Image 1 (cartoon, rainbow, N blue to C red):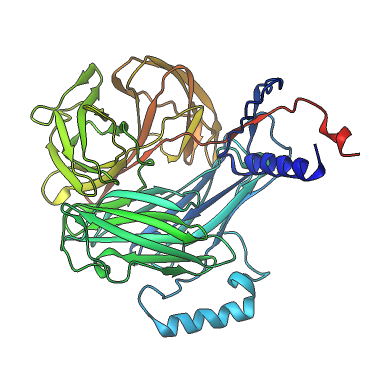
Image 2: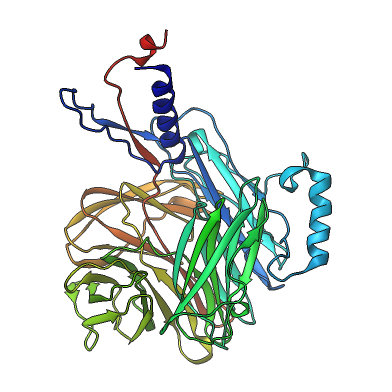
Length: 513
């Protein structure tokens, strides 16, 4: 084995340890000994980006950062969030904004950073949340990194209360890892909706992004959705209604990155039904789970998109506390290739929490999906979104929980599972507690959420799969806001805090001498 080959292997191993998104396997070779079992090691570095929270002067935002305690990590490290800088103005064609930012960047150096930049939020220790508040419409997008003991499972959420106006209510979103492709079924260009796709670039070079919109009849004609430049360390909100003149209630947004990488989220604001963040759906696949629809939902709309040319025929199942049932009149859903399909399920929950489970009727065709959930009646209605998501896997976390305003729903669509739920120490005091639960196959359970003893402040909930499974989960936050029962829902996908790294068959250091 030569030195070039050794360098390649070392580079791939380092990449796996840093990103946490790779599992390495060895190719078969005749006469070669099999590779040793891969070891599960904590990731060493994690990146997250948070979109600008609101354009409302009445907005009150809380950022919460948390890392669960993980065995085998380094003894040191840090996790911090920095301002991504001002909007570049590129989306709106604001020349003065671009000139002003260019001047700042010239003074600050590459990416607009200065030595005086201070973190907006800095973690203190794994196992304990830390929070920071912001007010008004001037809060920027944030970019952050965590390394060492803070990297595995690092979770950040921004939760915003908007007292009045379009999108009033409770808006929550998990800050996301930067990537190169995102799918958002459930957006809208209807007259009563104001939807933005927020793009945040954490890197030192510009990113170039394409945005495609798909309605009930296929791709919508767009004007400026191609080649959008997102400047380094910048956040860019793109108003969907400026990309097309077509007005449709149900639209799928596809974000693809030509160069660089971005974080992406859709902010969906309604004139009458409040608003919330629409997180990206899991990558296109044949079977999907949309977990944790609240039991008091008054209206549920399922939106599905098939990215390819093939049509998808899906069975629609509802995993309830007593078992799997089929929504009457909506047993199946036909989705034409390249088109967005939507079905109103109405008051399908009937006082019980549940999860939608989509499976192929015949052959499997990859799809993406999300549900829009409405609670309340009349002028007191509020909206949230639940995308199809990954399973909890080894571990998943939701932060910014309160003693009385938190609900946790867990579903085991195919096999009975045992889970462990840990409530962390509080952000201002309290001791962590854990409980185990059994979730029967085909059911959704709204488990009794553990609360830290002596809780002060907010806390994190970490869900771990003990046996069986797979399980899917979501957390609902509720609060009273001027007579409105405001709420937001976040899914709990696997935090990918561990990565599989195979052991070497021989001591390669000997060969390097």
